[in-house]
Image (cartoon, rainbow, N blue to C red; front, side, top):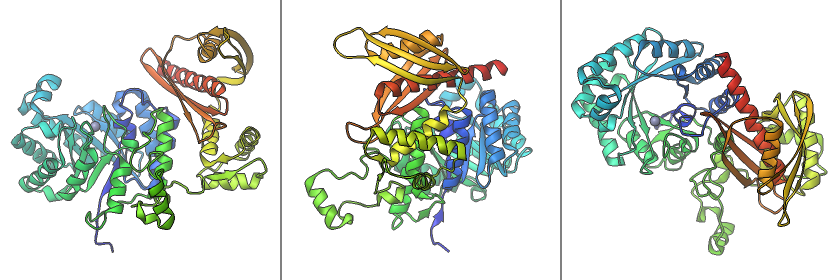
Length: 510
Ligand SMILES: [Zn+2]
């Protein structure tokens, strides 16, 4: 038995994370992400806000149905309708949880709820009992807890516990706290409220001052045993506590932080890449744990030290978080079996047809690019999987670019299996390519974001392009990679368009 206290990891990437502007995820992307989170050992997955949309309801229901070990949680406001809908979505899970909340701070009660303290207190008891009649596992949150008057906060939490809440979450909704203060709040709540030892205390810290992780750890040091967090720290405004940072802080500093989590840390890098790809939000290069430079040693003095002993400058190993050292992997001569083994190692099991197609794409890429790295293969397979069954499919592109205009794009695509072509000019080659897509597939969506990254180093590196389209409030992020930046741009735009179309149809159906 370990002498460390177990901290439950509650991931809210799909709920709080998805709420951040532009970070929307499709149904399929949520299912894939839930699978990765569960395999990684996340204890509780907050899969969405079932009463906020039909899409969220369906995603939470299906994630619940597919779940094996993780608790699947949905968020709901304090109304019966919200809670019922949430219960209907999570009830298929092996371990269902309803997370219900109401605002308790003076400013929120007055301006957001237009309710007085007594009405709020009554709603707390009622909502928690109602939820408890649907499931055994109920979490309750006082929204904006850290700006709530202490005595009133205690009364509300007491009411929630008396009505059957099993987890009490203390959100720093506006990201205002500093660690000592937040830790002290958790401690005094636990000391003041009767039966506080009958529930699990939880942190939910926002990162407006860059203190979300520090505050969460202070919460644990003062008795919290659940930490709410997100992959890459995604979340409203400046985001939430980053799951990977919380987990690695406990792992690396177990000497003075006597806590452990159930997370398999070697899966952190992959989860981070996946969330970044899905949302189109790049991971900052110097981001702790999962940034591109987190384990890079550039200066001569550091490199010299590292060669003699890696502990000189490294407090953890890249392998600990799933960054493989030997990233040089394959080339033109690599065979099918080696390729299949590589995919397996990267976490993919493809059916024979998909494997054939992936291998064909890999050979294609190896013809253009001497060294094919793990990241190239990940990008290639992700592209292939995301393009499956789409209405519009890329076929070919020829572009005239350079200083002697006009820049022109000749594009060929399949729309519902039928070949269509367009030749368009534009203000630069990317504009010409996007104009050609618009000429073939008429649509009103606006381009919100266009960004290009190199998948690996070198001038022959693949370009990974993210495109975000905004179609009257419905967002979709498309991404694609190719050694040719313009081809990647065309594919990414088409990918976004397909996703937007799928969402529009779903909306119509609902
Ligand atoms: Zn939040």
